[in-house]
Image (cartoon, rainbow, N blue to C red):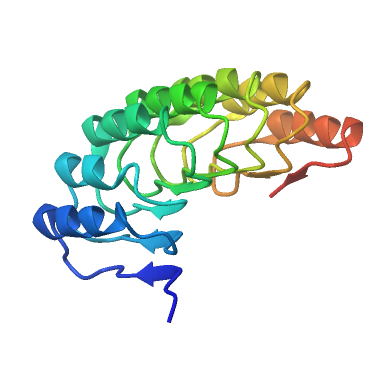
Length: 196
């Protein structure tokens, strides 16, 4: 049997167990997806698994900025990670800056799920700045991040010349008429994008 996915979401797994798992993954050549959502993983555990997999779900662990900083440093040297789920982790503006650095320096990541992290307009500016130069990211989930028309405009300006992002999820933010109109204009000028 060849195991390619392991889902151990919501089991109360802590850093000690994650270290053993990360060690085992160093020699594993088949596992590409690991779902560790809603466990008890801290900065130490996040560092252990950062370079382990092709797809990584660490959402809902309350990682915070310190863990995201370590993860972002590791991801700058990772040449296999294609999907990263970091939603529900209380990342905030500072964490958005670290993830912006990842998008600036990582040429492998194609999907970033960054939902429910309270990044606001200040945080989205870091992500938007990175999208100006990023040529690999295809899907970006920014659902429920308190983004207003101002943040939507940061994204729109960044995406005017970005031809690779095809799916942008902005549901449950604070985008009003002005931002919606700007997003509609962006869609009208670029037929390959889906904004959800």
